[in-house]
Image (cartoon, rainbow, N blue to C red):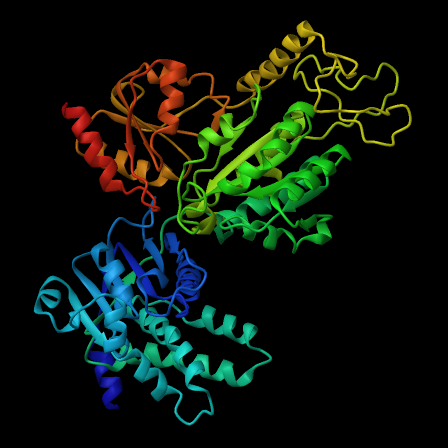
Length: 620
């Protein structure tokens, strides 16, 4: 037996229930790739997981700077989890800047793995360190510090290969990935196959990456630095076929599924904007489903083309974030006034203005609710998890085509880029609905309404006998002719409002997720706060508090029983990543003195923050 084999045999493997790790480094260090590959391997193992990619706000900040730090966090477990984790068990810091910006999230006693080769005088200065923090005894007393010469060991692994120093340095993330695969007993096979596919036409780069990945893994096996590895058993989940999915990917699959269910063609008119761009990128791959995608020159052209597609009998879709919605507002109002189906995807980010374009927020709610001239109500749906983007998108299409209205689909940067396991549904499990086009010419008028839905007919231009015009100017109630009569305008404004308000009768009632139907505190949420609220509610119930939580998918109109649910609790808490926009709407409509938890730091809310505020409210 070799010395290496003896060292490997002497190491033990500990079993854990869960772990939260974060890879952090310069934006050129490949942290998103590293985290993504670790996520894929974790999904293969069968753990429940939740991820939080964290991108720099600048396109290319100076290397080694605090502004240029990129990170990827993953929480994985042998039981069901709700969030990417409040605190870190392991932080992999590839340079001083990554250490400085992320160390505060590492729990006391947590593992700190650092690339010591990056702690040069220049990099320390860029990060604002006067001295090398690795030499500080305080650091080693508070955390388990593992100093690894990742850059040097990467160079050693690639000795003899005729590669540039830049290419060698760019491979160091795979050394860190291989080391973490060993530390948490993840299989390397998924990454090996991915590398073979990605670099099939570049054998030298493929060989280099494979060498470094395996070198990191074998370093963990043989070095005396790490005395044990960790195993997290697979989670007990419902039987079925699963895949790892992000919110943007789920939204795309929801659009495609809805188009097939309803028998309507999809046209996406979009202008690239973070974090919505991936919907355009992903949807463009599905042309064989009849999907048409158009990258416009600006936001206004994008929604204009999408609305034109809806007028022509397709389903127009447009994607953006808060700043883009400002520009789209006039066309959104035209879609509302002409009563054409249109899906408006608002993938929220931190504002106002350009704000923090790569950070998450929930601050567009009042904009999508009221950000148009005149009385112009539009249905609003919000997804709550990455996989829920699939179901929410299908429901948005159903409402848009049934009620002939634009619909807002709301997500945010956390959901869009975050990933979780998704049970792929059977086609038979999907909701059924069809699009009805007007084909009869007898008795046709462009605003003759369906008695049940109040939707006007959808007539494809060019259909003989169904020639018609629609306009932004007010039109006569039935005929659709331009009309300036004051009473007609009053009638039309109220008809349009009633058409949207009565959708509440066609959506599910709100349900309590955890807790009793009556109690001391209701935690009410919407959007991406679901995971943290669920975890906090479970925590509070375990402590003996009479707490429950409910979550809103339908933001306009609200579920018909929301008012009744609110009355069943002494206090209502609404956590949001804004300054209280949902709280404003709930207070205004139901006259409930709801309390808020409002933290706007570009990050998802934490379980601990919700628990702390809830306990204070209950205790008075």
